Every structure is written in C-alpha cells, then in structure tokens.
Image 1 (cartoon, protein in one colour):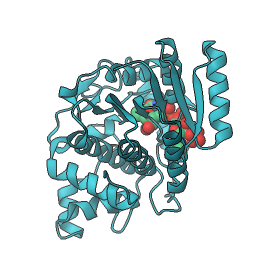
Image 2: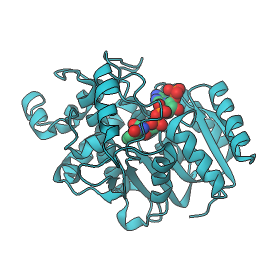
Image 3: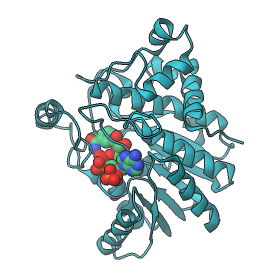
Length: 315
Ligand SMILES: NC(=O)c1ccc[n+]([C@@H]2O[C@H](COP(=O)([O-])OP(=O)(O)OC[C@H]3O[C@@H](n4cnc5c(N)ncnc54)[C@H](OP(=O)(O)O)[C@@H]3O)[C@@H](O)[C@H]2O)c1
C-alpha cells in the first residue's frame, strides 16, 4: 500500500486524533481528518499540524448519525477525485446511560457503523479507494466475549424467539434497539462491536481482490473520551479496577498504533477481527477465532441489515 492518502474518522479526540498524528509521523502525504462539524474537524486539523509540524491534514465534516451529511462528505471526496489508500473507520462510542436513538431511528452506539457503511460503499461505488486500499474499522474486546459486565446477544436464539429465525430482521432490531431488545448499555456496545466484526467479514467477500478490511480492537485506552456518556458503574468502578491490573490499559498512542499495524496486514487475513488475547485489553493483536464470529449466516445477516437500515448497497 502506498503511504499517500489516509482518511481517519472521529479525529477530534482520542484514538482517531492519535492515529492521525502517528500517520503524519510515518510520512503519509495527506491525512483527511473528520469531525461531526466542520469547525471541529478544522480545529483538529490545526491542532495536529501544530503538534506534528506538518501541513498534511485536511478537515472534513462527517456526522455519522446523519445520512445526508455522510452523503455530502462522499460527494466532497468524489469532487476531489483522489483515491484513498487507508480508510480508518475509528469513530464510535460507549452508549449512553439512557437509550438514545438518532433521527433515523438507530441506537447511538450502532449509528457509526451505519454511517461508516454509507461512506465505505459510497467510496467503493465511486471507485475512490486505491486498488490495494486497506480499511480498518474499530472493534472492541466485548465482541469476542469473556468481558465482565458486557454480554453480546446470541443472534440465532434471539432470531428464533422473536423473528421466526430471520437473522437479518434480528440484527436490524439490535441496530434499532427494538422491538424486543432490552436496553442494557454495555450489552448494546458488545452487540454494536460484534455486528461490526460480522460486517467486516461480509465486506471482505465483496471487495476487489487487492483490497482488504479488518476489524481491529485498539484495546483499553481509558485516557480517551470513550466512556464520557457511560454509566457511573462503568466509569467509576469497572474501569478504575481494570486499570489497577497490569497490562490492561495503554496510552492512546499505543492503542492507535494497532490500527496502523493492521493497515500493513496482507489480503489473506482480510475480513478477520483482531483483538487482545483472551482476558486482556492490551498486548499483541491476535486473530479472534470464537465460532460466533465466524458464523457466515450471522455475517451475511449483519451485512443485509446494515444495507436495509442505511438504504445503501454496492452497485
Ligand atoms: N478507548 C478505549 O478504551 C477503546 C477500547 C476499545 C475500542 N475503542 C473504540 O475506539 C474508537 C475510538 O474511541 P476513543 O477511545 O478514541 O473515544 P473518543 O475519545 O470519545 O473519540 C471518539 C471519536 O469518534 C467521534 N464520533 C463518535 N460518534 C460519532 C458520530 N456518530 N459521528 C461522527 N463522529 C463520531 C467523536 O466525535 P465527537 O467528539 O464529536 O463525539 C470522537 O472524535 C471507538 O470506536 C471505540 O469504540 C476504544
């Protein structure tokens, strides 16, 4: 992959900001940095330029909750007409204490995937990804299971119970947090990141042969703003306790470096979910082999549900 043009979503804070800084350090010619508002993206670009002493940051407005706004961002990129080599779909959040739905009726922590899908498909349909482009999307350890206080939904069981076995309808219900979905913020986060892992696998099957996509957990990096809206239990009990255990937390730079590491992976591992080893939130990236992640029916259901909710598909 050429180190030419990268696009980083959610670069106004945390890991997206750190990743953009690292990319500049690695000599990328241009790094498009997105923020929910143009002013936010401009501020991030100016701050990054000051931090790195490099004038390589281009601000772009991108509100992943708003399909019209994502469409405008795609149109702006089409107008530039320069293919992107590295698409880093980093934006995301731990859900709010109370359920929040976007105007499009999508649960807030699920919404970034819908916007990221619209962006990715928009770029693919416009032929605006380089032939050997790499796409990395932010996952998280709860999608693999075994994280206390975070439990993902058993999709086949949920689909059988409420959707006559229709897994696409079941994923759509999780994305919209209803019907028949109880709002438990941590579990909603686990589901959001699991659906991302499935979507990644399904996208990999649809990409042209030279391109690749990976879901990557950056691991624990609690110095970011990721849990700003989370419950006090998570913020003031779970995280401080986890932080006391050596090797469970990292600096935002170390976490963001995982994205860059994955961007150098080959096409043979396209579609995989990379995260910390079992029981850890840091350390080397490992391919996750849990059977629920590799269930092809779940992966295809996730793709179809995201297509249905976003109204956007590959041409
Ligand atoms: N930090 C961790 O421990 C950890 C662990 C595993 C996975 N992750 C994942 O890593 C990613 C980055 O998190 P972070 O720790 O860097 O958190 P952060 O400091 O809160 O940064 C998140 C970024 O995403 C943006 N964003 C969120 N929702 C958006 C939306 N709907 N539209 C546009 N932009 C949106 C935020 O913009 P605003 O400021 O405008 O909201 C912000 O720029 C997330 O996907 C998170 O789930 C983090």
